[in-house]
Length: 483
Length: 138
Image (cartoon, rainbow over all chains, first blue to last red; front, top):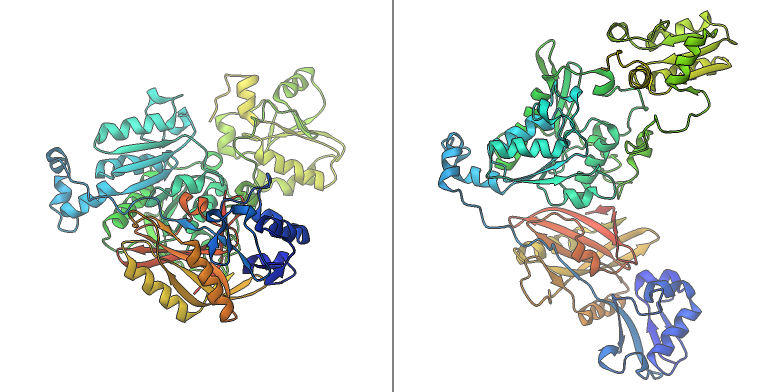
């Protein structure tokens, strides 16, 4: 009847007993008896195939049974069996690499840096040794990529899975007209290496997700967030906090921008500023609301400046301060940001201990979902081709366009009555509750909201035009310009 | 949640800084009350990795067994393992995960240029495929 000592964490499976005496003439029999007595314990010690788990060592008194007779080792009355995990590990990445040296060509190239005392040779070597990840190679990523490459940041990672399209060219200056249709990663890397062949570029052609973010981010010193959607922004923030990496943040909308450095040496994070995302659809993206093409240049370069300062360890980083930029007033303002002790990810009692489903968190569908045009129509939706047939047949129905007047001027569907979404609730009473009503906007988001308003008010026959006027241009009338 | 009392926390920091630029490792003894773990004592253990220890550590099972017995003698429990990552972040690396065990809290300390930088506590799963971050107070 040997005694088995139970390690603390396993006592939850042994009714809190810290040692259990079991029958058995050998160690193997004793362990079988133990796990028969406490079946929940079995999974902790044995794999599904019934083998001892790789991290479990079994000791008889002070000897490892592997060096005795393994499971057949006799165990007598006075013997003690212990379960001891084997534990090892390590940072894996070896100690910091040797400081890189600069070739004569590089010394010439970086001459204007080298003669600044605050940068000098040491600073330029730090830049060369630095590893910076740019999430997104769009509006913000364009100036970031160009200038960080020029400055000599030695390793730059790019995350993007998109291709260049015509609407990008008004601001994403890293891409050219000839690049339309090309992968943004390839187009950006080509320009960056064209400016500076002494750097290396890692291309991550993926959408950043909870499954891959930590693996991608862990190899970089600094993460720069150039994304334009809330799920990725929260994902980048949480991953940076979990990995202890600074998150150089920027965002833009129409004429205004923001920038700050999150999660740097105990400073506040994005969730300290915005614990919860806004309700879906409340804050329009650049695609929905527009952006002055120059604006991402200004904000992206503020991010680039902060990145270079962090690498060099000079100046006062933009930590604990949210910089607000108003291009129309041409003013900068600063808001103090404090770390929120209740912050769910970086506070004293974090409730977010691993990456979550950020699309669900933000209440928005995944971007990689099947395109809407191919999807089956849901109740309360109408396809543009069916709308065209309705118009051609001369059906009795009301067609409402809930976009803004300046959008209506760019393109419109004949016969549509313009009521911008913001004014829509005031006009609800103007329509017959039993009328056949069809509503459209640019892509179908705003009109879905308008449909909801009418249904809530008791309207019986309301349908949303799937894909909006963009789909109309694609499938019905290509002469209608897309914007 | 795991809380490390000031005494053992100071001892762990001193161990990590003294061992820099190599990795240090040790055991944490304390008490568990439901989900709340409190570390009362830190026990230095030898890094038994045969080779460069700047980015690797290994615990001898005998040392761990001795730590467990020492804990029992003091009416404490062995509740966690700590180790340092010199000039590297306090994440749970692939090496850490593959050589971990799900029974204990794994506190990782980042020591940058010889000074303590930040720390995290991790809870690996039984399949050793992932580790969840545990709230750490010190």
